[in-house]
Amino acid sequence: MIAASASSAGELLRSARMARAFTLVVFGTTFGAFAIERLMGRVTYVTMVAGLCALAVAMLVARRGELSPLRLASATLALFLGWTLVSVFWSTDQPKSLIGWVALAALSLLGVTIAHVRDTLQTARALGDVMRWLLAVSLGVEILFGILIDMPFPLLGVQGLIAELGPVQGIFGTRNALGFVALLALITFLVEWRTQSVRPGLAVVSVLLAGGMAVLSDSPTVIVIALIVGLATLTLMVVRHTRAESRPMLQATLAGIVVVALAVAYAARGPIIAMLGAGSDFSTRADLWNTILDYVRYHPVQGWGWYGTWSTTEFPFLSINVNLGARHASALNAYFDILLQVGWFGLLLFAGFCAIALVRSWLEASNRRAVVYTWTPLILTALLVDSVFESFTLFGYGWLLLVVCASRAGQSRSWRDRLDGGDQVAPVLPEAPAR
Image (cartoon, rainbow, N blue to C red; front, side, top):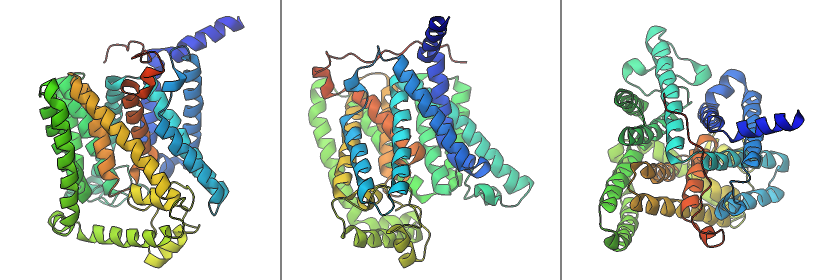
């Protein structure tokens, strides 16, 4: 009796339906974190994540015969998590720092699990389903409080300005967060459309919804991210249609162009900012970053200890906010946040983690004919560009997506292939037909 029950539980945990349900709930929980915490409290959100982590462990144990220990997580991810854990010992408040690390590790576990139980198309489809609901709810909330009731809703940070065409925040707290989520959704919806994994009518409505919410967010950072992702898409199209023998030279040329473009963009940052109308936003960020660099000088290699989102009652975050007369909860830049919290060594580990994931996914998309493989490098591009303006990539859904994409890329192109018997990839059970 007990053996039969255990066998049934194991089959359930290994099933494709459980994997799909798990992925949907993880995406829904992380992307809806702001609304969940505001409406039901932080304890509710933490409990949901803890339950999902327990389920993730159970699913990985049930699938242990399909998984290779060497492929479970990327080495660079493990090194970065290890360094952030070690940094707890020199932080100013070790219990709070440890809590911040546990949050990072929990989302990493969820991301690694999704990457092992879903393939790229299944992951994109799950994200698309969640995004349709969350963006539709965001639009409904904005219409309710911006037109029907015509008053702000402070609990969710909704200003009720949709009648004036924005900026709107939806259920994500800020216009920048909504704009970024809408852009991630737009990439996903376009991939769904091209792969014909959803009905054409639904694909068109989804693209219009995501594009409309991105415009209504009136976020200047979204313009920059959209332009760069658009250029990356065009470049990837050119590479994919180039003969295989010519691709290495083309890839090297493109890498050189990117380096030059970054240098030019930095040199012409003033006119670019003025053109985008983001002068006040950038001025705030520039003041914050300059102040952060003053504190980095005291602990340049190891940083002040990992906290994740800032503990505004602890040093140096409290001191930075006091000096600026502000209440920042992050560095408004993922790279500066890492530099402040885990120093130059942590930044190098993070840069290596991101660079390896981007290169692997880019090469995979270049050499595979299926359009779905473009989803991973384009999402990574959006995450890494947004990291220049916000710290979303280090917390919540941003970190989750980064780990998912890096883990997917690592399964197809890795040094582990030589140690683990070739190109074997953890199998994924077939999914029930899409509704």
